[in-house]
Image (cartoon, rainbow, N blue to C red; front, top):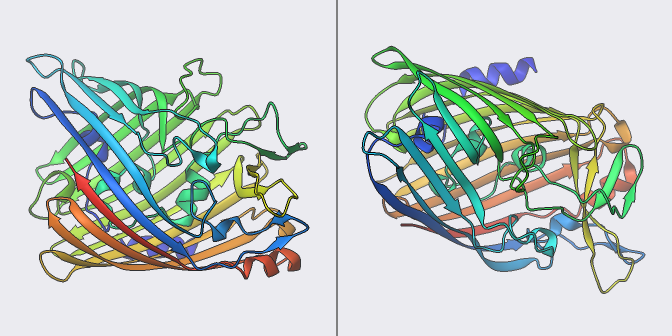
Length: 417
């Protein structure tokens, strides 16, 4: 942990010091603004496929979200949206965003969990604090907060994907279960760092170039599910300090930011706790970022094939639910603008899963390198190559399987409208 804190003091955002709370939760102009983006993606996974007794042991060798092919072209995201104000005084803002692509939201593990509405919220500006109601991104990890169309990194970091991107299991009819482990089909799409609830937030100017931003949200803990019973209520806290360094605004504001966040929620199986801290930096051509995250309870442990027919795969989610189970990880990343349209990128991330049980402990290390070419505004082509390595130091059988982990080539075209 001490090493991570030292690293955080030196590394800071590949994107910028964008204040995502204010950018996504409020509007600066009166009116209605159609918007959205489309992402077309090709991926090729070089991992080996290992089948034993009819069971596929290598889900990491396939392309998400269906885990059916090792090379695949996808419409990765197709998100039409509308945002604006509902009154002439701009005191009531709204934010709508849909998803029509067959990705982890609508077709996770080839299980149709169609939910075509990601965001639907209203923000009230009548009080000293902003009040936001509905479904939207909760404040937390920078990687989760940011708008996906501005990121030159096609995939989330491993710690962001496995620890933070919540999966919801159909625990009423699990394939296998005991007091801790559950293997079941998805009950809905991945959570996409969103929840339904009420949020209080504000950004205070400490001086002309420094800001303190905070947020508290009480969420239903149900991701994209249309459930506001708050049976699985979750508390989301966030605090950041931002120092404006130079030119730009919005997504392109040059700034230094440090932040921390905490999440504590009840789930049907066990409590889910997540927390982290990070720093972002953007000035001139250089973008840097670092973030550390830790979690307790509801530890996602990957997809499992539950069909012993050698010709078919019946993928299910696997979850180690107990609050005793822990995981942590971090990422360090940076980009550098070579020319007006070209940008070099690199990210190193480490994820330590199930650190409390030796036989279940897995470590994932990924180095992602690449280049971005911008056509105009945010329209771009991103090329990423991820060098993957995974190990199970205290489990020889699992470690042997993880040797099959391959690298991943990703090419993505983003169109913003």
